[in-house]
Image (cartoon, rainbow, N blue to C red; front, side, top):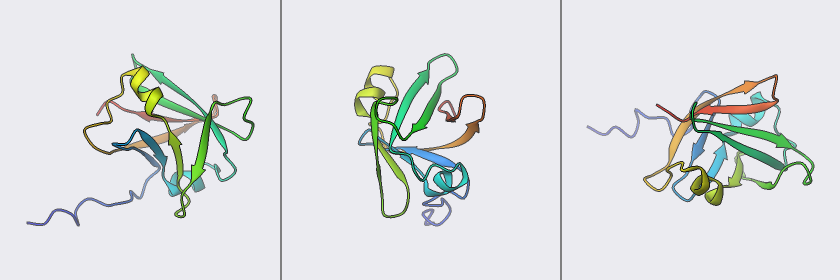
Length: 115
């Protein structure tokens, strides 16, 4: 049985992908839903107790150390290999998709990495 059609290539819910390369991809649906179109930089934070990854968008380089690039699809890409290595988030086994939510109080995306 071919299962490739059972798993959507791009989810129909706000999500991000941690890629095998160490890049974090914020899906285009997430960009649109949370108004992230103008994002040029981000802060990354990892809570090891809650196993959550938080991404705070910014347009100011002085506020956020990670530069964001944009794919043709509209997805945002963050080169985060060093950050993932420092926090112990495993990415080398393959790409994984995580649902995200918007934290209004902190103004950031939150992904629960423990599944």
